[in-house]
Amino acid sequence: MLKLIAMTGLLFVALAPSTVQAQKIKNGIAVFAALDKVTANISPLEIAVEESQKFGALTITPRVCNTRPLTEQPVTSAFVEIDETQLDGSEKRIFTGWMFAESPGLHGVEHPVFDVWLTTCKMPTDG
Image (cartoon, rainbow, N blue to C red; front, top):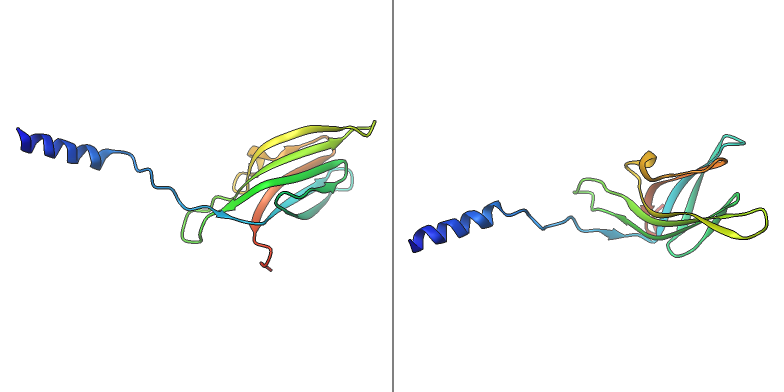
């Protein structure tokens, strides 16, 4: 009986879902592509984490930008806040959430005049 319990426990451990996750690499710069629909120009934006940059009426602030090691499946994600400057000068938050470089249409910002999506993350010393 004891042998059966030990074997059952071993089987349970073998079938338990793995909790091992790929290690995240925290980067200092989030790289976005921003489209001005009026001029049809796409601009690359490199913004340091915890800093803000204007693009037209938008202010983009990445809070976190993570990648995975080259040996892992690529997952590039950033937590981003985007505010729009209104005609009266006030700021309105139009986006707060995660963006994923591998799925730009899923969590990009679609605005009547501007689109913004994450393309990659990098360290400040990267080229």
